Image (cartoon, rainbow, N blue to C red):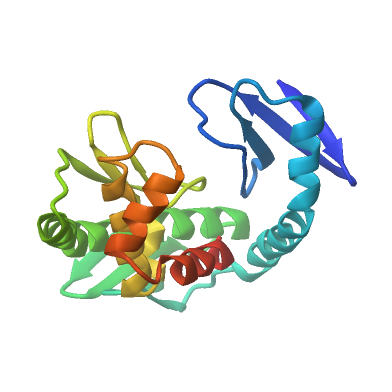
Length: 229
């Protein structure tokens, strides 16, 4: 594993043929890394990182803030797009849940450690958002594909910390469950972005022209997504 240090940041370098463009990524617990296509020199990679150092600083601050904010307690009610999840104390040894309509109770052992509670609730909310995706998005993807003449094979949903969506060589589309935290217009942009990849595999000018033809406001929505990440 190779690293490069730029202005106090230790950044992992991931080199490979699968990368189409230089790009920076980060995720909680994984740090910051740069995806590098073959053919780029170390100085080109360093210059690219320097140009985006403000983005790195801002987003690292957001991750630190998120760590401080995500402290759950018994009695909390967490609202998702479709559900209300209530954390209820019980005397059992493990966690359990019960769903009635749009109400979900997550039963929490009374002596659970804070770090365990935080992780379990975070993972559970991700599962709830996946349920929401399965309910809301298949018809929307189908509708947008038919409207603009795209064809795809399978649709899946993942709790992914590195991207909002992906399209495989077989035209299988995967969407991030965290899209349930965004506006409908942003969700449509991500769906259309991945559908465009069924026709253009890279992020060339041709690709962005295709995106703009089906989503004229994509630049604004793309910026909004970057702020969320």
